[in-house]
Amino acid sequence: MFNRLQNNRLLTVAFFQGIFHTTDASYSQREKLVQLKNPWSHVRWKGNYSELDVNHWTRQMCQELDYDPQNAAYYDNGVFWIDFKSLCHFFDIIYINWNPNMFTFTYTIHEEWSAGVGPAKDSFNVGENPQYRLQLSNEVTSGAAWVLLTRHITDIEDFKHNKEYITILIYDNGGKRIYYP
Image (cartoon, rainbow, N blue to C red; front, top):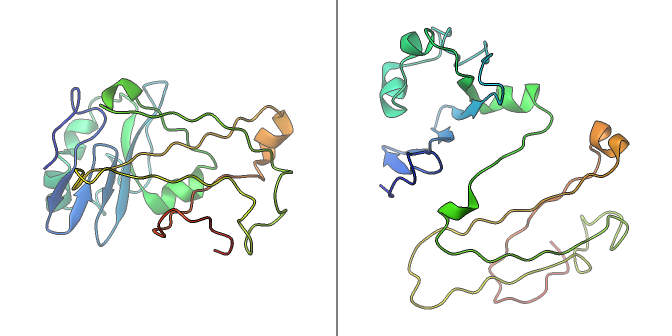
């Protein structure tokens, strides 16, 4: 088990018989669950895996996630569990926030890449896209690297329709430029 960070708010990682979970997400062989908080601190999800759902919660899941649906039903603080399939169905956009001061080491790069630069469709050629190399020292034997990509939306129409997106592709190729995915 990894160490818990600042009141268990950002990251807790544990392995329980093939189940990986953090305070924010849970992945099991059967179901992927995400714990969310409504920013208004009230009004929770009422579907699958809500505190009202008696069909999906199992005793084992409740124990592993330290969650008691009956206790949760008494107080609505806006925190709720939702299955990943429902999350994708009911939410178009998700904004994730965290406290960057919780990371021991950080490195920041600010770049701009306009949608008109590079190929119109990069399914066949990514050679014109920005590419970065992450090189770790030989002393590092394990750990995690977090990468944040931010798309600044400045046009209300772009926000409404959200047709453009950003993504990350990771290759282990010795740092050479990738042209064909």
